[in-house]
Length: 223
Image (tube, rainbow, N blue to C red):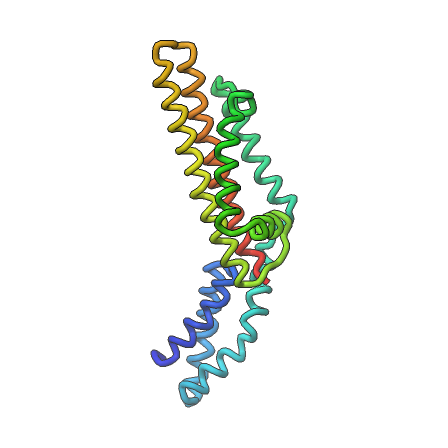
């Protein structure tokens, strides 16, 4: 059986690359191993046994599509999930006595511009405008993409997460310098610290809720 392992690994690597969940790949592996064992019990040579076992499972691309259909999400489901998270943050902050309005106030405009600008500009500089637009179409609108495109779009998502936190660090550094410069004016220290904290919230939402979810959605759309 050991001589068949490289072909089995190569076969299972393809559905994994196409976004099939790990538990489904484990099921494919079990089916393949059982089929292979039956073929070897029938005294077939190793090459013939693994070829017959793979033929029973069928085309790997078709298998990947069938398995992924179970996990495909309608764009409205994605929107509902994002809105639900934002709503929970709003309610929980209000219950804790916080001022949720700070996240949409004029003071929050600078962190939003810094983080959004660094993220968007960095992605365009790294991958080009077409890839950024394709990420939106595939992740949010449910457009299908080739396996090669999926791999690149997942790289875009990972890059976007890093850039979001980079924008946060830049904004917090700027705010910290501002707070230090007005240390003799207490009325400006509070807003400066508040802007720093808002930067962390924006970066966390964009990096993990935004690009983290998008990476998963992209994997589900492999053609």
